[in-house]
Image (cartoon, rainbow, N blue to C red; front, top):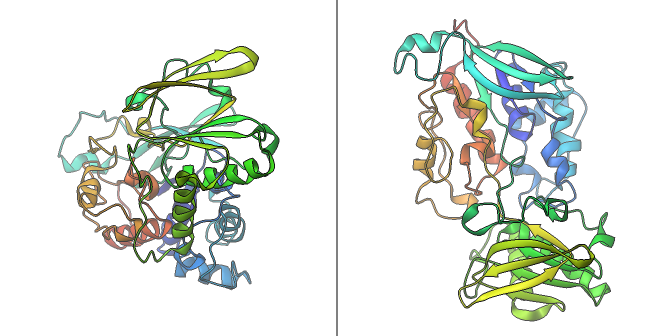
Length: 397
């Protein structure tokens, strides 16, 4: 078995597979928990108990390691990586099985093209071929089963109107942040500047709270906050939210939108129409709103508009994708109508985790495609359900 990606769900998949007797290896483009570390300064909504599996905790305990003291405390991304995910890769079950710096370029089947053997069980008997780039050279790995847990964080969506890149977006890329910013480390880049914050999700809210603190200490800091929602409330609060950190974030973001923070200007019903460079390395941004077009000049842009899966990895495989979320169709259909709360998502059966390509499975955040209602706990449950359905290691081909 090959697992693509050494994030929290990928490492759990490899661990659970190894415990069931599979000869497993993990191919990771960066280092283990690379994406967790990229937003490691942010505290998660979900507590430790929701981000660790019983098997993982048991394996670490056998090594004399305990990732947390209080299971109800919410870790930062960095703490989860440092104290749980990375230590799992050093345990006897996974030691030497994670290949860092190994970027997967594509997956196919031996002597088989995408359109071959449609619905024929013979297709599932031919081993997978995984083409990867490692230390400047291309290598090929073979595998009977592949689990793709590469996530979505590596593919930010475009900023412009309708999801396309805005004219001028590529040229301005050096002054646009698509991923969460560590404002403690980069405070000087934002203090006293004009900033356009685009997005109405939790990442945008987190950025708004950090910018509020910067603006409080630097009165010349201006933040234009553009959201697609045309009228308040701009952010939905969940009644009796079981995740207190999430509830706090929504309340404070709502207060900022209502005018409680100096230096903020809300721009509702907005879409980024164009970006142009102007004098003094500033950006002129044209926003289309439900009222009228508006042009603002800013120093930086925070584009918190979501992420999407890299579907090119399995371009030569028979994957049935949802036309709206870009996730696997059967799972996407089961999530339809489940509501917008990540805690209300239905459990995934083994059947919905399959697709027309036998032996290839998409788990973790990538399995939700553009749907952001994903929790690590969901990915762990996917792993357990899938491995229980395919059974212990056996000779497949």
